[in-house]
Image 1 (cartoon, rainbow, N blue to C red):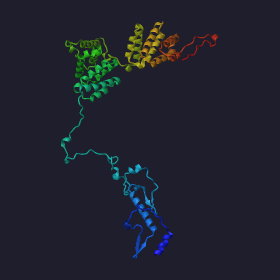
Image 2: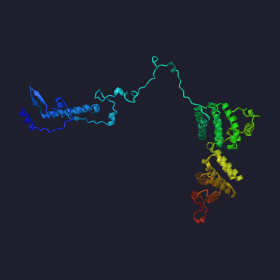
Image 3: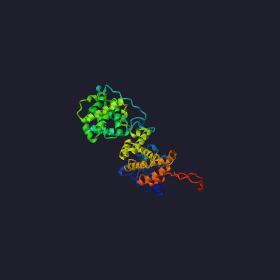
Length: 470
């Protein structure tokens, strides 16, 4: 038997392989791993080295498979006939997908998510699950009967004088830009004004005194809108009472404050947010001359509205962007006519600013040039040219608005020429003067249309007019 084993080993040599990471059993731990013997019929025989090597490879592959079974349970690993691990043809999509896989990692079960997909960190239940209101268990040791009828509300602290000024002032200033009184009412409704409600009209009127006429009109509308919603009539009366007492200080910044406050009072009485007897209640009780001037102004306006039909509801006028175009054109024409009669450039500039229509100044330029074309003599031309030069130098009329006004005249000169036969020659002369004074540039001057003289038949064109260059 020994002779046969020795002959088999000589015919089948086995190379030495490092199997140090293989699992050792029994006698291998005692240093007998080099030779493994079997006992058959009481005789010890040596096992073939090839068989031992194959057994160790299979054991090693099985251990590797068990070690990675929890991580790769769904990948279909198996052993081939020679003991090598064989992976299925379908590779995993990504490492992140394996980490977020909610299937069991033990290789058991049907591959469904744990707990029906309702388990894991950050999961609040299965998709589509709706939670009902939790009923209070009266047998709960922590049950408190008084908590069932509790109502929780947000507490807003009342504003002091400094916080009131910092909070309400931006609201009023933004209202002057957008003009939405409802938004102001909503913002004030969120504040705890408490005893400072009467200071809202006082602050609004004080800011309007330093602003434009359109802002004063918006302030009167705001007071009328807030009365009955956020403020009461007594709050409005207390506000005007404080305003009359502070007139000596307001006059320092706004010299016309008494007249303006009187107009606010007259408008408030007309809007029925002040009683008709409000002014009469101050007779004989006012010592301040500024307060008396304000009350006298209000009384005169109310008397004029009753007897002469003065519309106090339109006392301040409306803003430029809110007025119809026809009304703006009439005011522009009236302004130009008054300027031609008076020749006061400063007053004309002030009136143009008060219109508050910088986007509509091209209409002013257009109407001024048309007035020159329709006038007789050189006086109107020189006065209009002086006015345009003054407004252009003071930047009241921008370059763009000036250009648009001239271009409008260029485009409509054909229709203007029907009423004014010499319109072409007057326009050409006015454009040259405008260029020489620096009102327009050379490019705009070259765009001026010109109409040639009527040619004779002997000159070859049959008496036809030259085509227009614009």
